[in-house]
Length: 183
Length: 271
Image (cartoon, rainbow over all chains, first blue to last red; front, side, top):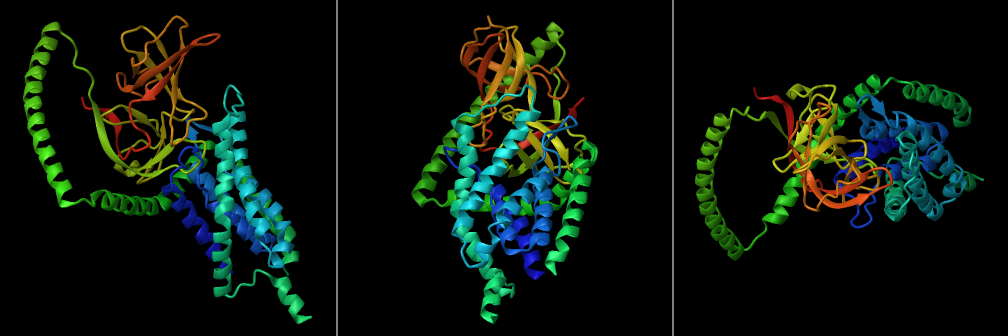
């Protein structure tokens, strides 16, 4: 429970912190820290915990980034919750591997999932805007892919730190390892 | 234990998410304003720490550099005093001529200074958060123009008690009715889809195909729509293109939207 709340606080801090990190020079991609923590949570916590994390993370994300102009909402409050839960469930599928102490693939996967968040936001905006025009030039692809590359690059650091935090508060992120030992 | 909780937790999640998804735009704005109220103290603290750090980095100068800067500032000060004297004379002359011609005095806006406490971290929107809100006198429904002494910046959208979100003119969703200096051409300025925080680009659309605008021509807000006051500089024409149905001009924003720190919100006429 303590670790769950620590993850929630870490997500809030990451959300604030990423506001002070500008877009990457040249490619213009954003450094998105909060999804990395969310995806770590999807691996470290059981499904109910992941869902609560997705709910809180998605709600915070939308509440801060939702654009309401003249009564029109492009990406309505709540869509990120659905997106985070879907991607969290995808990450959760790789949980058995994580519980065996392996997290290289998960780091790469958190990069892919971060790119998927940015791509999904872009598609939602495209469908909502009138006229519907699919602009997929180099700039757009770099911003989608760049966010994922940065997340994949940063996630080992985050995963290591959060694993250590879990160890400090006595939360076992790899309960199957414990089970093997007891056998 | 946790497996037994999966189905109930999924049900609670679906109900909770469904409830939020079906909120009305008004209630969504209230949720957003509430969260902005919670997060803005953290953003303000972060912004002041960030500013102090940048000031510290920029302030590290040698004595020689400081002496050079001091000399340059003294010279610049004298130049500005001289220019100021000249301009005062011109201002008085201009006022006399205006009175003589019976022109109405140009509307002067009542402005509220504000500081940018955060730049939006989302990829597809160009927005900033300012440190003024409803308590300071901003309208809760938003739609108040934001500008600097250099030109137009954008307009307010969601307004919390002590902070507000400003959508920049480089955002595709921010549209400004505009006129081109020295012509009868009118159009709509809006951000380009691929515009980002690091390289904001805007375009002037719906011009006539014969407009043939010269690069460097000034673009001003026309005042149509009522949100943006007329006569505020938006930018300069970079390039004119003829499209199938209309003319389109790429515009360089008058304000450097990437380094913006202080802005003014138009809170009404001073009359």
